[in-house]
Image 1 (cartoon, helix red, strand yellow):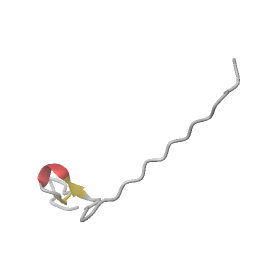
Image 2 (image 1 turned 180 degrees about the vertical axis):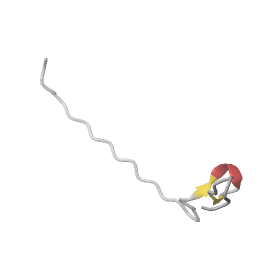
Image 3 (image 1 turned 60 degrees about the vertical axis):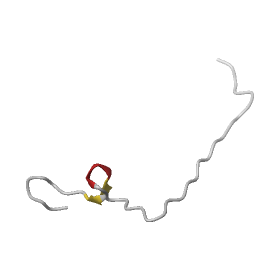
Length: 40
Protein backbone atom coordinates (compact mmCIF):
# COMPACT_ATOMS: atom_id res chain seq x y z
CA UNK A 1 0.00 0.00 0.00
CA UNK A 2 1.27 3.47 -0.81
CA UNK A 3 0.84 6.63 1.20
CA UNK A 4 -1.44 9.41 0.03
CA UNK A 5 0.67 11.88 -1.97
CA UNK A 6 -1.91 14.66 -2.33
CA UNK A 7 -4.94 15.36 -0.20
CA UNK A 8 -8.11 16.89 -1.63
CA UNK A 9 -11.00 18.26 0.42
CA UNK A 10 -14.35 19.40 -0.94
CA UNK A 11 -17.03 21.57 0.64
CA UNK A 12 -20.52 22.11 -0.77
CA UNK A 13 -22.57 24.99 0.63
CA UNK A 14 -26.03 25.94 -0.58
CA UNK A 15 -28.79 28.27 0.54
CA UNK A 16 -32.53 27.60 0.42
CA UNK A 17 -35.20 30.30 0.49
CA UNK A 18 -38.69 29.44 1.81
CA UNK A 19 -37.70 25.79 2.30
CA UNK A 20 -39.66 23.35 4.43
CA UNK A 21 -37.28 20.68 5.80
CA UNK A 22 -40.21 18.48 6.84
CA UNK A 23 -42.16 18.98 3.62
CA UNK A 24 -43.09 16.26 1.17
CA UNK A 25 -41.90 17.25 -2.33
CA UNK A 26 -44.46 14.90 -3.91
CA UNK A 27 -47.38 16.61 -2.11
CA UNK A 28 -46.71 20.27 -2.91
CA UNK A 29 -44.29 20.65 0.04
CA UNK A 30 -47.08 20.00 2.56
CA UNK A 31 -46.03 18.45 5.89
CA UNK A 32 -45.36 14.71 5.76
CA UNK A 33 -48.27 12.69 7.12
CA UNK A 34 -48.84 9.05 7.96
CA UNK A 35 -51.52 7.96 5.45
CA UNK A 36 -53.22 5.69 8.00
CA UNK A 37 -53.45 8.08 10.96
CA UNK A 38 -53.07 11.47 9.20
CA UNK A 39 -50.59 12.48 11.91
CA UNK A 40 -47.21 14.04 11.20
